[in-house]
Length: 126
Image (cartoon, rainbow, N blue to C red; front, side, top):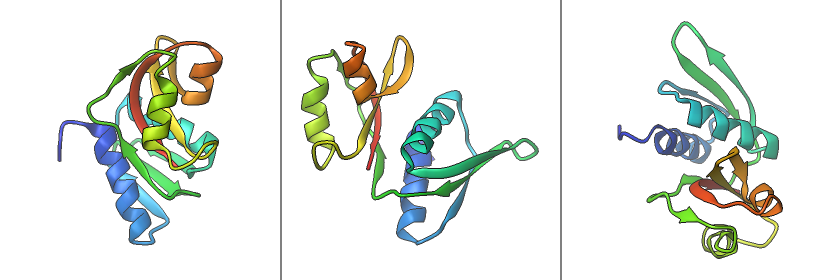
């Protein structure tokens, strides 16, 4: 286990997808991870997730997902550089999502371009 909770959770999701498992239990959670899962649920990559308060874990059901990875190092980008990183990490135009941490919270790369804001790259999935 590394120190990056988001990277560990996304690797667990990726490995579960390769092993053809539908649900996964993530035992180490953080507020950043919860926000990433919210965005993934909005886009359909995660079908649903539920907190288990007793065990302090999250049970997630994998949806339509091919790949999900954390971006290391977490590059800082301004509004004009988002397109460059979108081309680097995503396989095609209008396919996949970059998750960016901005002053207004986590958002997708489309929302960041709409709001004309930059931030820090967290993860991507498609």
